[in-house]
Amino acid sequence: MNISVIVAHPNPKSFNHALAEAAVTELQRHGHSVSYHDLHAEKFDPLLPPEEIPMKAAVPPEIAAHCREIVEADGIIVVHPNWWSQAPAILKGWLDRVLRPGVAYKFGTGPNGEGIIIGLLRAKAAVVFVTSNTPPDKEVTLYGDPTDAWWKRCVWGFCGVKTVHRELISPVITSTLEQRQAWLQRSREIVASQFPD
Image (cartoon, rainbow, N blue to C red; front, side, top):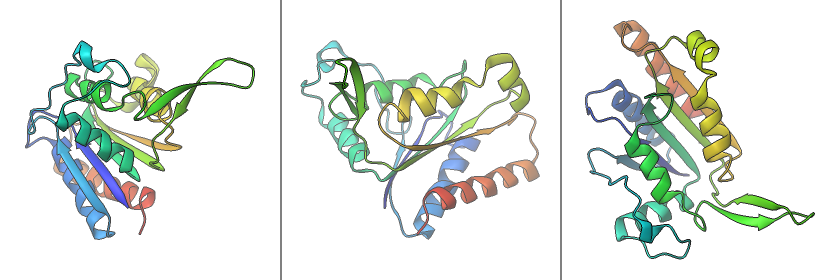
């Protein structure tokens, strides 16, 4: 399988990077082909210029390469911190520029003439690891667990990915080495279960 892995954290020594590296190692252990993108290290430009908005617009070669990769991916893994109940701006910009109409989805007409969204991605599953400093119960009771709904319904579900697993890892800021090791092991198990041999 071709698996695309995207990490969006500015610090290369972050726990996000440790999670992404664990995912890549596990995928390779199962014989998968991995495309890895550290958006900050690559200096990905998240700003969507107006000339890229039309569906048939010509896009820069680096954006076209990302588009091809996500279309050809059998699975997707994203790792990011929860900032203001969403992904960091660089990852949101990646979504804006790469999950384009005509690439990741298109608009169609339903049986009653209503407008519908048709997801175009062939990926069977997506896994999203989200780190946070808010305890999981507070994330649900105070904020309604926004990253879960956003990734499952508004992003990957919108683009046709049928299975989406979002794993909330928190609170990282007060975690012990043992907790982080347990989270890494859990992440490997999730990757193995979603993307078996």
